[in-house]
Image 1 (cartoon, rainbow over the protein chains, first blue to last red):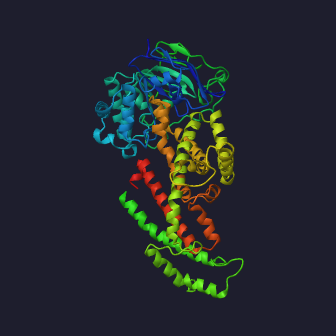
Image 2 (image 1 turned 135 degrees about the vertical axis):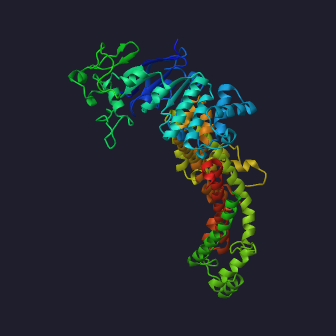
Length: 326
Length: 307
């Protein structure tokens, strides 16, 4: 049985569709990257999974964690899963740490709640966690407030807080977007190491494709709340099938671009929130779209370990579209 | 922090002096004087009185005499209460007002805080809406309506509590005036705390705390309460100073010998020294309360401590 099984998860804001038919499986210890631009529904999908959608948003479909259905589960059950089963590392570490409480207080309350540790035992475990996330001078940090730490330190504290519930799944939402390039590498390495040492399953939400291969075996590309493509990370990045994935890869900085050249981008912008559409959501921005794309929603096609939703990529297509970055 | 306290206490002195000076000359600019009555006094008597109270001196001389007295702890004789020094009147009234205002403040904090916490359990729900309507009523009803209504109900109709009076150690005397003083404050505090709690509960770190599995009451009472208290504390500074110096209306209705009545009576009677005395006291209390507000800010918000 898989650790996490998501079937046809949808998120609605009144009639508007934020997320549609999201399905994936994650084995214990497995890893998945959810890739997409801002507003593609990545974060909402993960909030839906924890029952933390903002008021006015509702989730449909099925999310089974360790065999237990989470959609529609009572608040008490969800609370038992949050932190202890699924831990969430937020995008903005400064905004997500309580500025009014010491690091030690914020760690201690989780150790008391999830591991029944208090006093000296809790302190020892807190120090061990801060050490595990490679935070220098852990004893000093316990007495400090979030604003007294640097960005990289705060990110490490966020990870320590996530580990405090001894979770089985870690969801990292843009774990490096607020960090500079050298710190980014350190945090990626730390995440990979924590995954091994704590036997974690890992979901990384990102628009930074450089995170994907070092951290995640599988990837899932979201656009405007719809799955565009899902595949093992290596083939997805080397030979993307879907025109959107191809365009996304072309738009990555750092590819072999001559100096002074303009970074390719995807023309247009995300469509506004709307009721579920009977067409391909990417069609208006797609350079391969034809009349069918604007009239009929493509089916989800599956071949071997990959899946995609595009009229232009038939099931028998060989690997490698025209637009692959490498 | 000691540094801050000392600095604020020292800068408080010129502030009070300025307040005193302004008040001194403004009072003298007002028409009429302490000895004006419907029937004017015989000129000889009035001259003697003016000489007795040094009103025959130049204004500048009077001002210097007054400041000299204050330097020695003497706020001068009251014009209206014959034979009393101003500090004696204040010393008699202040404990009563402090007791009354302090009790009202405590009650308002406890009740207002509890109402706010109840209201944010389900924002926009029936309980929230009912409480907010009630508190609006509490703010709108003036105390000269509330106080007599309370007397009518609990003293005259039900006979549970005395209608007025003030004897030391009689807690029953305290109940109705404290309730009348506290009611609008309960309403203000509940509304301020409710809205700041709602604002805080929308913060990303609250969502993050929920995502870590913390219970809603822990989120509210540990993670949200400190930031939510800040706006309330800003309000409480001046509000506490006003409560602690007594209320004219409440003291009139319940026959309580506090300070509040002096503020109005003394001004109407041109009791120059008494007006200056109570104004100085009020000014000092405002300064003190604002200092306490700043200290509380530092205690609650670690980011303000360095500054």
